[in-house]
Image (cartoon, rainbow over all chains, first blue to last red):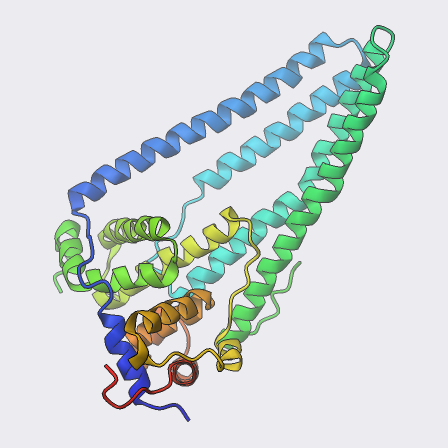
Length: 201
Length: 178
């Protein structure tokens, strides 16, 4: 049976911590908000620019390479990357709920669900990048095989790497993480006494 | 509480009254001093932004605790993702089961006991952390239920376990140990 004095002693000890906290003034917080928003905008510009550059490069390959496989691979890569870009922008625009409006259980569960869904979304979508990349590699190897024969083993090696990354390592990693987060959600449901069947993964 | 109060004034009032509580939460959620400073700033920022939406449907204290815990829980989930570690938190039941053999008497060293307490809290699942911190802050079960979203009965059961875990890990070093 627990001893009542001990938690009380610990409570006294606990309350001695953070006696003089450094609190920001509203003006400091206003400035910090502006700084964070500017940083976020800059980050978004960099990400979007990089992805657009990537899309433009493959788009250009569609017109530059005469080989059908390379053109098909380039066009499919543009489509898949555009899909990823739109998804990333929509995710960023997602309105986060105010932390004061939800209780701890609902908020934490929503955070876990969001993280799980992100991993689940990523898990099989890596495969979408595999086909176009391999087609593009094969097409480019066909074009330059006569000029530079070494490109064939190089393309094979590249395809093997792409296969290992996009078909095995990344999907499995994201799938495993999605399951871990689902386990956390299940444990949370069990602990909160609302053990509903939410096992989706 | 005047709901038409300027959010800045409301924030200053909250910071004055609950600043120490927020600092303790940052301690309990983050072991790394740099990240802890960032977390405290994040909590203050979240609170300041959120007070503009405070509608008086719950008490200001409940609102502040919710914001602080929810911002900190987001921080925990984000850190798990950033540090690429798999989420593996300790439940109160597991903490209770593994207690023993590593006891620290409060009377032997306040800092050591405090370190142990924070280490224990930081290993707990964010929801159990909320209950334990609220318990240590002397909040009643109904208030804890309001903040966490758990039923009052569930909160009572968790408090019972918390008392048991703390008693086992911090054996009494005398009635006047502190």
